[in-house]
Structures are given as C-alpha cells and as structure tokens.
Image 1 (cartoon, rainbow, N blue to C red):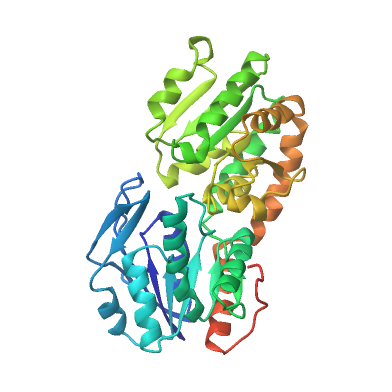
Image 2 (image 1 turned 120 degrees about the horizontal axis):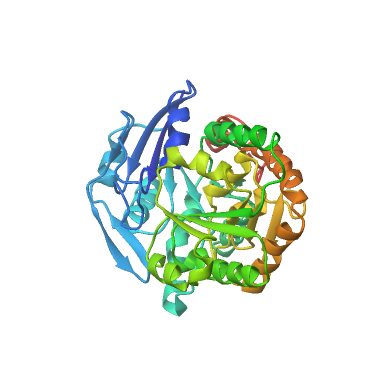
Length: 387
C-alpha cells in the first residue's frame, strides 16, 4: 500500500470524485490537505469533508490576478505522517513554494500536478516571478500534467530549468460520468420515437466571465439568429457578466436565449441531456471538466483551441469542432455548421460516447497508480503517456 498525501487548493466536486475512488482503492493510504474550503469565485458552496481530508488554516492574498495562499502549518502537518509520496497541486502561492522546498530539504519524495502554466500575460515582473516559482520543479520525482497540452508545456519548463530528465505524464481531470451517460441515453431513446427536433439547442456551462468567452458566444449566436437560424442557446451558470449578457439580448430574441443560473452538479445530467451541442469557447481553460460531462452525455462539442480538454477529448470533424480562441467569426461558423447539418449531431455524439469510455475515474486512478509506482521506482509507465 502506498501512503500518499495530496496538497490541493480546494475540494471541488470533481477532485472529490477522484479522491473518493482512490480512498477506497487498497493500493493507497490516502490523505488530502486543502488550502481553503471554498474559493470566492465558485458557487457550489462548502463541501463535506470525508475522513481522509481536511482544510489547513490559512488565508490568501490577491496578486496580479492570482490568489496566493499562505497556510502556516502546512509543512508541520506534512511532517506528522511518513508518506511514500506527496503530491503538490500547483506552484503558485507561498504555501506551495514553502512546501516544495521543505520536502526537498528533508528528502521526502514528491511529485507535482498542474494545468498548463503561464497563460496570463502579466508583463516582465509576472514572467520573472513565474520562472522563479517553477524552479522547485527540478526536484520533483515526476510531473502529472493535466492534458497533452500541459505535457508539452511542462517538458519545455523542465528544459528551461535544466531538468529535462524528469518524467512528465498526461493525467487529465476526471469526474463521475454515470449520471450523464444515463441521462443522455434516456433522451436518445425518447428522441428515437419522435420526429427530428427543432430548433437546435446549444448549451454553455460555466462561469459567466470574460475568460470563458461567453461574450463572443452570445454575439456569434445573435448573428446566427439574425440570419434566420432555428436555434436556441442556454447559459448554465452565473457570474459578473450575467446582467451585461442578459441586457444584450434583443427583446425579440428573449425566447431563444436562456439564462438558467447556477445548478448543483447533481442537476447537470438532465440539463445537459436536453440540449444538442455543447460549447466551451474559453480564451483560456487549463482543462474544462464540463467537456468530460458533455461527451459522456453523447453531445458534440465546440471548443476553442485554448481549452485543454479540447486537445484530448474533441476530435475535429469526428465528435466536434475546435475554433480559434477569441474569434467571434469562428464561433459563428461552427454554430452554423450544426444548424445547416443537424445530422452531424447524432454522428458526432456517438463518437463522443466512445471517447468518454476511456475517461472514467477508475481509469484515471489506475494512471495515478502507474505514475506513483514509477516515481517510487517500483514500476514503469512511458513518460508522457496518456491515462
């Protein structure tokens, strides 16, 4: 049994899916330490802590658009248990920096888990700070990168810090998809007894913020409606752009654009299943677990090329489309393709289901086990390998 501690930011519903399965796996003796209970820009509220998890006392500070955490007892708590490996999630923050250095100093093996680094353009000062924060990675036993885009990025980072031999593995985010699969199947069975449904229903799920590209999506969709398309668009989520987006919809299109607000994770499967095509047009997204959920439902997906999950889960002209990030015109063209060719919805949806089969939580836990074994020198898995 491997004694593993994860130092993670917060208990999102999706990391909890992973940790719950890992905690029940006899290969692991799991402990999870969180830096905070809930982030100010999330809406799922406080999550109940299982017996293997706890939240460290501390606080965060805003710096150049990032939240920098400081949890003064983190190093002490980590020393209280003799772990085989510690997994440090992310390198931004005083806590993470102190922990990585402390683990290295006392000879504790540790690995790193992170999304694509360095997407924010924060100028010379920000770039310099980021490079300094990445330096402790040269002492990691391995890196678990969230998606193939992140694998390439961390391989480049390791070259820059003179540590190219450290293995980098592709271990994307995962989530429980059973309810999405069942909801999608129910809707497909229902539709098979009915004539082709019109209009085409598009769905976005996530925060209503500029980074997610929702402003571009709404503009592209309104242009589509001006051309006479029979289509509807739902925004599932909330955020600071909510009022702005709502007021932007002309009165005569109010029945075509729906703002559904925030819904809990348990409500998402049925909402996803009643739509035809999923969209995530982010200007940047390290991964995007909603794409996992959409393909499990059997939906075609339109993503920007700045969405991490798009590289791994969206195959152009097979189960969806990738468009240039920040391009309203590219979004409009992609939307129009499904309106003009609704037969693609079923064909692409079947391919999405096939891709989703490989993204189960259980498969991801097995990928972590192989990664841990190699990091400890007790097993092998090809560097950069996909889970």
